[in-house]
Length: 144
Image 1 (tube, rainbow, N blue to C red):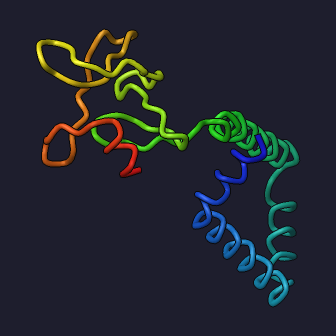
Image 2: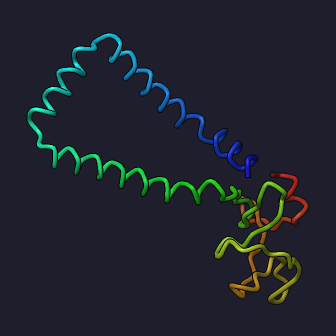
Image 3: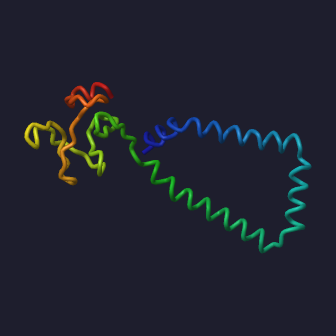
């Protein structure tokens, strides 16, 4: 689990950098212009009713919980690479490009077509390079 979280964090460095820069900007503005936040707080408490402030608080908490509910399952997902018309995981195991289930049956199907057979989709997926030339699983795995 921790390895997946580490990989997820490393893959999203750009997002973390933007977040860090935004946080630093807020800190600098707060430190450099403390009266701006005081003025905003005074305006919000005098202009908006307590019910409105409470509704905004509840709405922001609801949005935060919804985002967490969406993002937590994404942390556990494994990244797959599409190569030769087949998805591959980091251990070089093939997955069906249609239903994303593991496929293991490679051979000759449909009168000479070599490819992976998906028992869920009941289809043969031919391994091919970018030009459409058929390649073997060993060639595909060596390119990963």
